[in-house]
Every structure is written in C-alpha cells, then in structure tokens.
Length: 299
Image 1: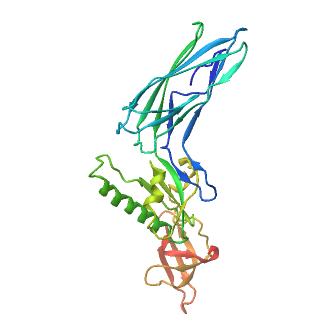
Image 2: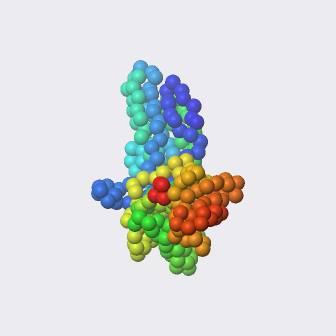
Image 3: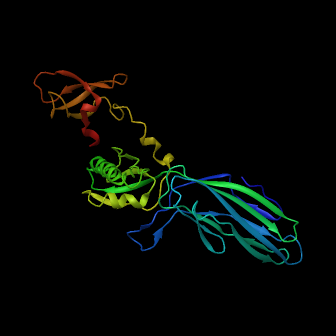
C-alpha cells in the first residue's frame, strides 16, 4: 500500500492482479466491456501560491510476447510494450490549497498470457523540488471465471464440447504461435445449477468464438465472478446428503432400476442406503449406493 502524505493520497498497492482486456458486446446493450484498472491518486498543493507538478511513468515488462501492448491513460492515452517502451511525462499546475485527481488508468492487453507482468515506476514531483514521490507497482495477469448460458439439461455436455473445441484450436495455432494454449483452462458444471456453467480462461473474447459451432451454447453473462463465489461447488456433497428415513425414492441403477422404494436405513460412512421395495409382494430390504437412487419426495 502506498503511503499517504499531506500532499498526496492514494490506495495504490504494490501488486495488482487483473484479467486480460476483453472486448465483448453485451447482448442487451451495445457498449463494450473492458478490463480497465482505475488507480486513485490525488495530488494537493499545500502551499498558498500556484505551483507546477510533473508526473512521470516508466515501465518494464515480464511477458512472453513482446508485441502485446498495454494501454495507459493519464491526461492522454498511450500504448506501451517491450517493443515500444516509452517514458510518459505530463505536467499540470495547481492553485494554492487545490487538489487534482490524476485519473491514471491501465487497460490490460487482450492477448496476454498468465503471469505476464507490467512493472510501473511512478514519479510525482513539484517543480520547486519541495515534494517528490517515487513508487513502483506491478500489474500481473491472471485467469478469470465467467458464466456461460446454455440449454438446460445439457450443461456438462456443452462445457466439454467447448473445452474440446479449445484444444483443437490450440493444435491449429501451434504452428504459428509456440506459446499457444487452450483458451478454456477449466470448466465446471455443478449439478445444482441449471442452464449455466463456469469457464476459466485468460481470454474471454475468444470463448464466444470457440463456442459458435457448439449447439446449445447461448453466450456469456457479462462480468467476471470470484472463485470465492463458487467454492461451495468445488467440494462435492456426500451422496446421502438430503436423504431421510422413510423418504420415497426411485432406484436408478442396478437390477432394481425403475423400482420405487422407501428408505429404511442410512449408512453415511459407506454412503449406502437400505430401502424396501414398495411394489414387491414380499418386503425385501435392498442395500444400494446412495447415488443409485433418486429422491422422489424432493423431485
């Protein structure tokens, strides 16, 4: 965290994690969703007379592809990359006891790779030499998780299809890009969620391209989600979860498939249940795996 002084305040941290810039036209709207990082920095002239200040930005890069550009906006907009590295200098004046927000923004690149990093060396000083601040911070690219919409009941099939399309696309690109990776890093289709599934990717803009020929894919929900929002789906629930003694169930696997039964005992350790077949003339207790039955009381 950057220290605050009487003449400058900011919430700037040493390292910022962000996804790659994404250019997706929203289906309901026509604007474009981007991954701009606003950096809050405010400079105050704590003296009574007008003074001149200078902002200087220098950069270094840790990235696979030297041609990938980052967009920087201060007063003006700039593109910087290892092949086009430049120092940004802008001057401004402040009347006595007046403040100015610098409105520094970093727009991450569209084609970046995981852990690509932009290092920024920020220098803010007054022309009279009284005030000077030097700060280094970094922006590191990480994958993002997006929500895909799809046909209800086909969530897992569609997720796998998109992942397979991504792998095929990666093989096709390997000849011209030695760093080519599957744009679909991971997919998750929780049983509890109908009509949606999750995709982890570095390049959100590429997902809809890969999914054009996937039947049942209905687009992406605008915005990213945090891993903490879906952590509960990462740990599978015990198969006996939600089952109760006396509940009416249907056997969906094994020799008694299709038979209705009533639960007479539950073994949570083995994840097994003992049921009594309802339509059998002689009460027959049958022990089956919990995942082999469907709870009709909650169906």
